[in-house]
Image: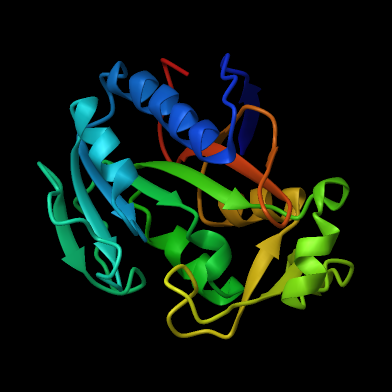
Length: 224
């Protein structure tokens, strides 16, 4: 898998603003690539904020989530489908957006989900990654999250995160898997991705590091 990094000039005052500004930069870049279609699936969409932003850049988003509690009444041009993301058929979409979802799944479900991204589609991924130097120890300890226990499984390594009972937790699994940086690239490579671009430096959320990655299983990016 070909890997590289790009560093857009984003200087946001908060984690939330950093995420939205990075997503806007990615959407602007993708809309200028003539090889990328406009049908976009936002998996684990929650309040559908990113799906609504995608509309501003000419994409046609379908927001998918197993819960409806955070879905706003006015979705504008966004189509919403209530579904477990593991059951949703991505095959007709040009862009698969997976933001703040992957790390709420088990390793087995992550492997399945990455395998379901169409060969012709672009993946936009924002996820927690276990950077040992970026761990937020107080918040992690309060959650009962043992960030020092790195587990190896198959070709992967990561830490086990205890899911809670809240609108952002996994619906079915009590624990989830957070990859180390190398393990996350292994996940993409074994799912068939041929190019992965890391967008910006890792940034810090409540428990530790997160990363933005744009990847595809065929072709090459012309505008990133």
